[in-house]
Image 1: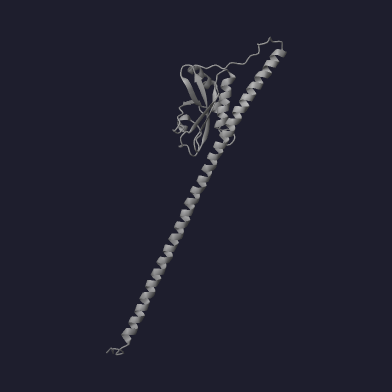
Image 2 (image 1 turned 120 degrees about the horizontal axis):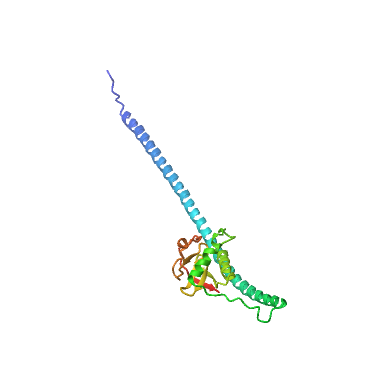
Length: 228
């Protein structure tokens, strides 16, 4: 025979213990959830910082590249214009003196006249010229060097050419222009010898032109400067 416990406090004490155990279990679950949420928040913070940090590094590099290109083209264009004019004048005068010293009559030594070519003559010159085969080297041999070399190569055989500097808000670039008899002004990308169109307010066609493009290639052309 099983004797029943007649103690009136027996059930109440049992229920209290049971309730305490239940509360402890609930507390453990709640604490585990708090810890899990905290870990997720910390993970999100690290991921966010990583993304922001990477984006920041990318923006810093893009800003540096753009500033470098713009500063380079401004100084290069100015220096090219001044050096070209000075060297051309001094070379002509020195050549005239040498011709006179060699017994030439006055006027025999004369300034070489650059001619405006026909379009087919320009195409033949570009096919023979090897400037486009030069290797692009960042900070050493860039678009400005390509343009200067193609310009000088054309004028060395009597074809009139112009150094062209273009700029946007984020990048700078250089190419060469030729005034042709039958097709008018023609812009040539010296890295590929391809003919391109320049329009203020539109992006430069980097890929179509076959030129090395900057980070912010999508920004439109804001300035075109032609130096004959």
